[in-house]
Length: 394
Image (cartoon, rainbow, N blue to C red):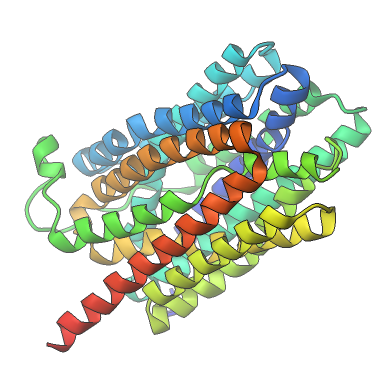
């Protein structure tokens, strides 16, 4: 492998993520429309469904990360998670109520919760430290190719199938099954890392992370305070006059910008550092929220969506890389799991609050509060970075 080459395993994990994201986005981009138009749900219910999904995933993410450290078999935990998510896809078209959708989301998110930390631990384990930004950026870029291919497929299929949302949900099972097959056949578990001690024998051992790791987990989780589900972007699209069939176009744009930014930003962070780029990502999010507050036409709405995608491209890979930089090799799964756990709790509260704000005061209030929180989080990250530099200078 060349000194500057991202390992083959990272490429395969990225393609697995791509396929699963195609499947998930074929469903996710139409699900808010299905809930509102087909089942008569409110914005609060949308927030509850999204918050519930995050809560379910959160409940298992740390356990999966801890278990991957303990048994040193992150691949097979990732297979179990991707497999469960694939098995959840057929439940969506069988659902005729909000409760059925909650069941499908719950099973899907349990799968996501199981796979996330072991997959990220695999990326960190096979990548040299000098290439971590590139590796996590590449995986996120490939993931986001699926993020815009899925909505494009959803739009095409909606037109081809005369707006039959359930038929699109059924077809979403195909790329999910291919993702599981590729993971099983294309990836191997890495050797056990040489580390500070042995595998964590119990939960207390998994929590025995160094101060730098805890600090970075807290810092990156702060970003979640400012961001809520993309489902609210879809609802805003309906508000400015975009039809249900073309609502997924917003997610196509978001993931296109996200995917184009993630890898070069990851590579740039390997050279110039990460926290300044994270601050910039939060400024992009605040700008997106401000634009969406005033958006009354599709043109301005899509500008806001593009800025949101830029935020994601600057932040998603960086957050995982910041943790991988400092986590002990034998506790990486636990570190990623703890990050997911804390971020998930924050996201649960944020999505429910966004839905309540939307129903009580309208879309403008939801995005205005998001803008204020984004700027507050940018200030916190910038202050933390400055204090860290001053300590190093001393």
